[in-house]
View 1: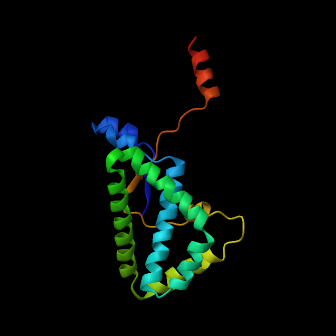
View 2 (view 1 turned 135 degrees about the vertical axis):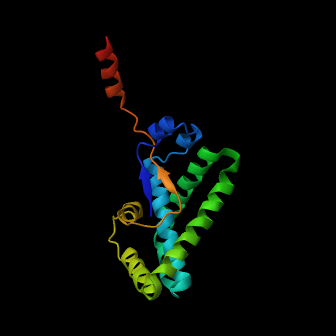
View 3 (view 1 turned 90 degrees about the vertical axis):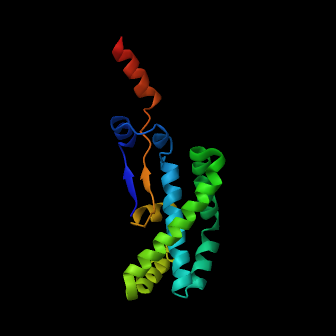
Length: 167
């Protein structure tokens, strides 16, 4: 399951972990991309294992613009965090995600297709105006990695107030 560790940079400092771990933290835009990737992969696995290819194709056509934008955001995350190895890390993540979700389907046994096709039907029935990112964030979708949230940056107004408080 997806987990977000909000105090990761502090924990890394306290435990003596390398600073590199904090550099790969996820921003809200990254988290949305991971959520959508998980949803897309879940529906792809459903299409392949439950003979629901038509539903998956309809999903891709309907949400093509959102899917492409979130894929670019995910690529940006891996490029930012891993530099020259970003594409390889991204590819590894996609493979791990598909494997993790396939394994989850195996654990669900005979209920897998019923549950997964219901998810696909739910996505396809989303009313106009509901974003794919909001929907994906509302689901507890499987992730093969722990996602570390970046520390919140303070607004310019808060920073100015802190400076004036120190005087």
